[in-house]
Length: 469
Ligand code: SF4
Image (cartoon, rainbow, N blue to C red; front, side, top):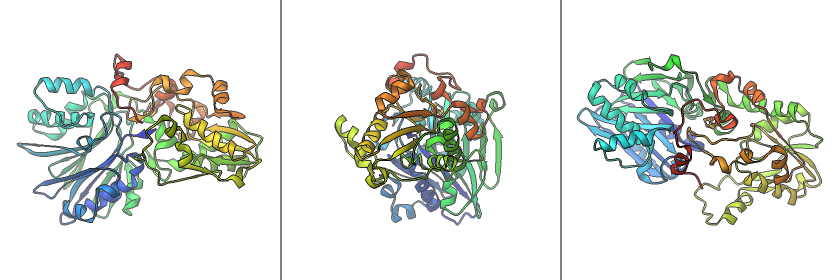
């Protein structure tokens, strides 16, 4: 599974300062949120410049391209596609030039009704350069500004039409504008470094520039940063419930991030502790599926008193770009990504911790690798309840029929995976581990109950979305 995108914005109140390198470092810290493309737009008070490219942040930018991006206000983006194909036209920030200047937009999330909005705009004569929902937001904002002549009013108007998830950083000429959807699905935080205000999907972007975390951007907040900082709330913000994505805590966010004032590392330690309380095991050692289950495994180990060990070593240099043309090769990719430590596994009864099971194919291949390496018993513990339904808010998971837990009972899944026991964290425990009230979390993929309306013909919608290889 992959999340769709990470965003950064920066505004220096010392206008002689160039912020492009700070955005670059911030994007570098958010690389786990998207590896397909990266881009930065900056404004220096006179003009806006944008540089985008395919690949990792370090592949897209070099010293020269960073130096050329000169400005005291800017936004950046790393992308992984859930709508739209992987191509340069779909990379962000998107920008528009019109009689009032330039608008650039970087977006994390998924706008469910974007195809409908796009269709309406095409009828009005708009031609789109990409096939993403993010360009729809950019075009809609430009069109609405022409009517309102005020950027906050224009945002207030367009958000009434957007259904889904959207954390946005917008550069409107030399103003930085930050927007988070009224239910707060995707994370977004405000930080500071000296005389520079910074916003980012995750607080690790502030750490990367030795900055400090100030607060989370409130769901429904529109924050305008120029010579001063002004906060507005969306008109419907008070009438909808929050729905923070539980999966950010379980898997996507870096463990060293703070999301909505919760320390992700603490949440994952809790997940391990609660898993142990719910599903103890007669075993000798606790091991993670690296890297995302490491912290939960430490929690399980501390709670159970069992030693923590590494049974699998991850090759951190295998990226998404690695070419595996056949299904057989893809199934085999576990062996390229993870190598067993035979001396640690041989003859042992192990508790194996993983963050989640989606299709089940990777989990099965991992179990096979451990068995071949000599593990005597494998007790698999999953730090997230069964995923029974897809995500429509920007996380590339799978279609409903591909999700193993939507088709099989837990005992059937255990048999398929070939493990000695299998335990999933319960929904109640997960909610306690995160520390946010149940009705303020999105649990859509666990319960099938989503915090927004969904397209009427959901199967057709799923088919049109770009699913990941
Ligand atoms: S459906 Fe699941 S993955 Fe998607 S936003 Fe909700 S909790 Fe997160």
